[in-house]
Image 1: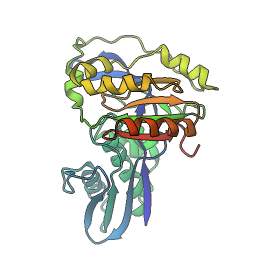
Image 2: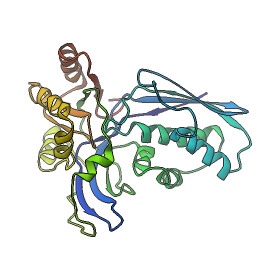
Image 3: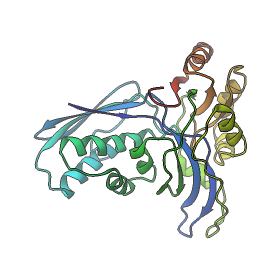
Amino acid sequence: MIIELAPPKVNLTLDITGRWEDGYHLLHSLVVFPSGGDELSFEPSEKLELTISGPFSAGLPTSADNLVVQIAAYLRSHFHVTSGANMHLTKNLPVASGIGGGSADAAATLRGLNKLWDLGLGRERLQEIGALFGADIPVCVKSVPCFMEGVGEKLSDQVVMPDLGILLVNPGVSVATPLIFSKLNYPKGEVGGVPEKVSRFAHSESLIAYLKARFNDLQSPAVSLVSEIASVLDVLEGSDTSLFHRMSGSGATCFALYPSYEIATTAASAISSAHPDWWVHPASLNRGG
């Protein structure tokens, strides 16, 4: 059995830097992939099948409507694979929550089937295939802290991050990403400047200073549409030990950074007790840290 983890993708920053004539928005984002997330397993089989379990599995399709199945079918056809695969997804991340759960699952499928079927594809080739199915999949194939630009196709080298704790909080609501982008009213055909990229954050102070100088341009329109996001941000702002907080992606998941994983876990317990209906996930900013 081959097991691939699908960690959450957290946008520490998200600047909208332009918009093409076809309507696609250009972005500049510092992304990280904390510990935890979904898990996919792959076993040899004559058929190509997907099963799903986990706390957020309800209502998810196991048919061709699922990106995991679509990518598996593409790989099988494109590379003339004669065998199948028994795929199982343990869905631990909330759906449509601004942390790239579906894209992370798709990326894990590319990595897992590449191994199971011995396709011999390098990471760049997997990223190219992933881009056919979604703009966030290439960065999720990489799954290391980095900057992503354009519509997600331009990725920097790995960014060195300090060892911090991070807390992800979702109020239990899904957000439609296209609706959030529609609220931006960014003129088509305009391209602005690109923010500075940094290759290394040696300590927490330098990272926090960088984050405070940048934004998530989707946060304001998301808050205007989903009031629960403001409630989460208020709670994180009131967490005495947090170093910084913001919304990730198009929401509704928000994050807060803490000096350590242990401190983030303590904060998670307090927030979970006060808001038992929220999804609260403490993690290490650097997986394995």
